[in-house]
Length: 354
Image (tube, rainbow, N blue to C red; front, top):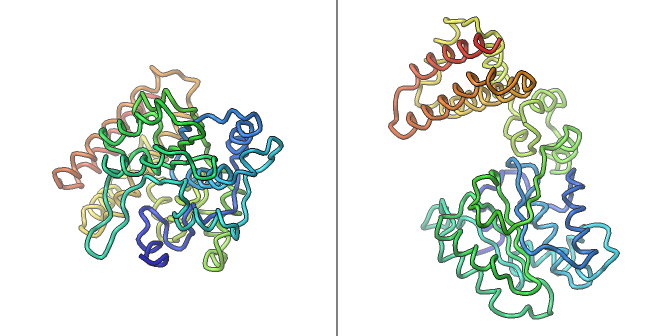
């Protein structure tokens, strides 16, 4: 497969942005980078890392950044190393970008082909095949690196196959496990990893990251970017997805309804329910649920000092919303009653926590 075809079929790649393995600019997360540098300088780099945090904040970018460094014997043995930057033109960088480096394996969902859609999981056979690399010594005596992107795509069988190698790691092996929800990773894997939690990016870092993506993103109006940033939750990817005036306006509409609680604007909520019940409203429906989750999370954070018992009604209604939303997706139920009830339940929870 040509590189152009490979890029076009890359799982989870955001259209118009480089894949993390081709991204050499790095924004924020200096503490995360520093943890790896400390391990390299001490000569005691932990063999397995669980790199956690929200999607689109740079976890995979950091993993590939680390991989390029440790696959370079000169850098991995440098006890005075002070950064993980690599030249895009170096032989190692080109090999990593092409996934052709002999000491690098990648566990990911299989890309789509002309005959098959992209896989939805990382199967156990793919894990066993990728981990065969660890059965022999690296040709240059250096590190062998396995990147898992992401842990959520592992099945129980494939996670257990990975665990076997992590439990008894060969010398100079490094496992970089990317996870959007590290608390859900197999406990036996978590216990053998050094956990590195990356926090959402600051707005200034998101702006700089977007500007670094090239001309098509440099044309985004500053006002639209400023409107999208509060809803991007510190994620470059999420902010890119929201660089659409209609999406931002819709989020603001739903947010106004939420901010008005416990007063319920019946007419507007009924209109919203009717709109979300349409067949072509999947994106707006998902955006509504995301906006509600973000609003409830923000409210819980703001009122954390009130104690868990006082805030329990909001937590309970949030869990109910998530449960019913899953049932609607599974059984393809009418969304209208759900949306109407959802706002009534939220209004009641707001009254009880006032």
